[in-house]
Length: 445
Image (cartoon, rainbow, N blue to C red):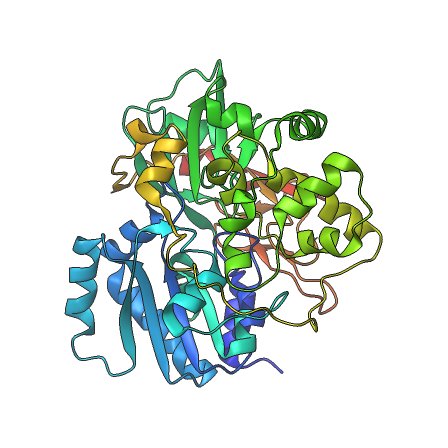
């Protein structure tokens, strides 16, 4: 049975504000020894965590305190890279009298923000293969999720998301945007008038998804919009089709094993072997155990965008095989023997500065300060599934008037999911199984 605290989080529609969007009320219903705020923000160019910790310091720390009390944790950690000195100074001032919240300073490497890597860095505990941080006594939440928990405890629903807009824009910035706003309209806030020849990335350059249609909406998990030329090397690499990936792999893979040597999950002892998966794909081998290592891939892209000397895509080959295994009903062997942590784990962290240069993004590594904007969004298209779990069920009808924050989609029959709320005030102009469209009232524009 949920507590009043977790009920408020559920009713507010709080999910992980990055990644897959796991419903936060489920995560916080457990008991834990430690709570870790993942402020690593290891994906290049994203600035959301830094800006939130600067401008909403007290709210975030109060939200963390509430989570510590709810889960019975004995301590909370804010895991942040040591290079963010301005943010750290601000946090230190607010935490000087705190007894159960500490800062943990991370090195500047990728993927420090992978929650299993973060857990290892902070606690020196290894989350088991196929497991979650709770298996080793901790809960990990990102910065914006903590802020949303703070707001939910005070009755505010999730109607906005913080997004860094950067890349090929004149004035990179971070904005608090209404969920359902189009990528195109968001980019216009940074002076982008034409998108001809451009492609976007929703999220970071390593794990983000490609944006081809800029009319699509942002969601609760959108943390960045990175605008790049369609002919940039990063976009060309990320948009390779499976057939091209396999053909290049068969021609150019030299079996050097660097993809496995730099695999963060393999270094943790999870037995992820992208070089074996490449070998199987290239030569049609029937190595079932080698194929199964693909199930442990976190899809971080270290093997694809950094490690491979020939610019191949071990990650995509892993994903292909992983999908086939899952479709065949084969899952990761959680009970299998855990390997020891590699002795090289401290020496194979990918330096972010070098990664940025390798990705061809050095010119875009700029500040993106938090800015406000005139809240005159005329239309939003709000997806009913922005999270892990089931689709939300619409509770509104076409031509209904709604106010910002009103419930428009609810969790059905106690299934795991997330409530959806109106992000602007206006009229419902379309209701489908996938989304709800709201057009603003004239007096609110």
